[in-house]
Image (cartoon, helix red, strand yellow):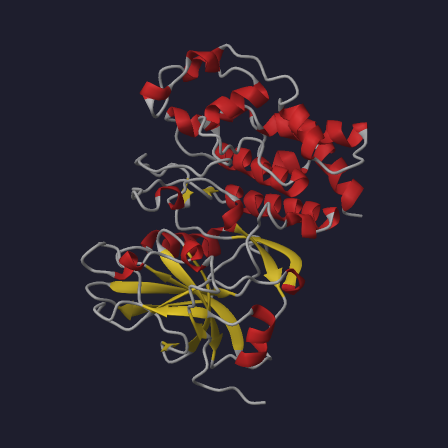
Length: 409
């Protein structure tokens, strides 16, 4: 059966689609009266740059919306990252820097094409990427085998090694948060930067793709906005369409080492290294702390420092690792919230790092494997950045190699 060129999903129905409002961007992001850095309004079926036909929504972030599109010239599916007005310059610059200086880019998500769209007042930069599967998520990691998860851990570490050898920190720059999207303006490597590969659907017609991915749910944007557009619920890519390839992307806040940084951003919960909370500048060592948090998600389905209790994340670090070094005292980003106990309290029995890994790690883990895992975690979860291993050192670490040997034959 042929495709109906006018059929691009279904109107949003509040009676049947209960999570729509929680998964889409706020309509105010398109309104020139409410935000300086506006999103570009998009309608499903629209063809951009006379080449890319929009077929589904992939997601949104603090600076952009991301869409699944079909390249009408090359006959392949791609991802289009459409950056908000006045944004995107750093990501494009860093993408070019990576292509120029990084020797091994096999585990990095890099742009294939770029073009500009005229906006309401400024242009919107569009970056074209390969289409990948969903981002890493602690909620879906159980569907992956330990072999797949540990292979991903190695691929991610190899990606970081390539970046760091070129003098690039994945998460370096900070940026101004907004009250609506405080945590979207993240400054550290985290699970949302990591994606699985995806089985190609480029050979399928649009309706066959919708049968595999689900039909888009869409809602028209206020007609007073300068251009027609739709708010579309992001696709949920089925697990069976994801491959075992693992990629690091999202370089919008990456930086070359030595670049001056203005610290006015909010790090993502569960992934930020402690030195960033105490006015220390970004470094490759910050990436290594964040990497080990992601390793923990891959190994035992959670970051050991994530908390939803309302307590400061630093307090959770102390519960897991013990007291902070004295040189941190007086440098906390929010001085009124600094606690004296952070500098004297011992780890919480049963809820220290060892206890958490034993509790949430794979069932039936041998004592030898547990010691290997704790060995690399304690090496990377050092409060002082200069004490953490480099990516190259960790790849060569006997305990890291032993874990890979257990799961990745």
